[in-house]
Image 1: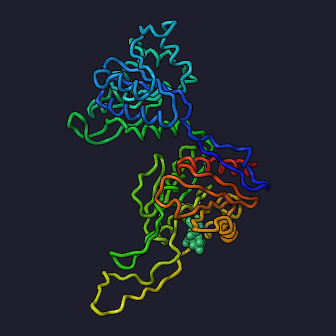
Image 2: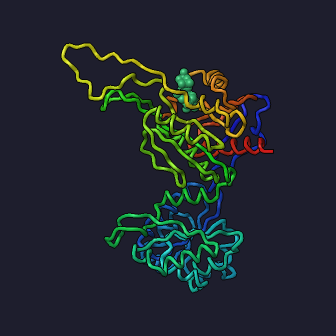
Length: 428
Ligand code: CTP
């Protein structure tokens, strides 16, 4: 759980009155249903990940699922006895389908086989899992299905018809992965991976505090060419910016991510524009900023580029002096966006970042004033480059607030909640 700490007195908006919902799955009661399919092996990993995220996981398996994986495995991973039968006498009233669903925050069936979905569609309830799905309080307990099947089964009109009807009935039918299938064929129908399902569930539960907002994020380093094989870049991994893009999308925003050269996967639902140099990043951001409500400048943009990069590789000649590089200043993307009419008129909220190596507060305050942005987020670069965690210092006109060291995902969620609060208090 992330702890945020107010470190100065002063009128820091939102520091005390707004505490973000961190660790979204922490304490959630999840019924994890398994129907029959090879993808049951992924459900074991998913169960583990859910427990690690703090969820209380109650596994319910169909008999077919137990042909692929044993309840022993799921019991060990979830730390709770697995339920399989509607006749299970362990519940005093013998009504497992009622008892297991009344305290549930969601039911996730992963894998959801073609047969299981067909059964749900008709409201059939001849095993505990389908019975529990039917018996759940439909307004209060969402049902998510992670389909898993052969590509022909997935593409079959009957399955697609069932998917459409299940969605119309209020189920959240998740997408499927594409690629090699256990049967040797290749195509659509694989169950999403455990980490994708975990992220999907986190996004599902994330409060939609930025619903309808358009958020532009830039992230990662830039690369300034010296010649076709050499260049100058920096140690930014892009992880913080990508986490912010993901948290914004999870919060319901329409997110565009302008990414420097990094190999990170694109967060689900985020529109990504890949660039290499600062000039390319500048062009992409300026085009998108005209539409955005928020701009988060998390990228480590190179301040200078090489004047007249060589068209061919510069060769090392024996005895010759090293090449003398001349530099030109790159555009300051953040300062330019912050000076735009859209930002000055209050329609675009700009957030700057500062990666420093010392005197964080002083540098961050000076940078906020210099870039003329309402919020600047400072961090100590060498302490976080490439890592999965960070500590942030939020500086605005009223004061500053520390977000203690935590995962970049948690910090990003906290920052998004902070931003949502600022935007909400600006809206008439
Ligand atoms: N920034 C930018 N364009 C640049 C340089 C920086 O948009 N050409 C943005 C960064 O994305 C970040 C903020 O400005 O949000 C601060 O970046 P930083 O490199 O720390 O600041 P500089 O102004 O370059 O100051 P210095 O390197 O001297 O610390």
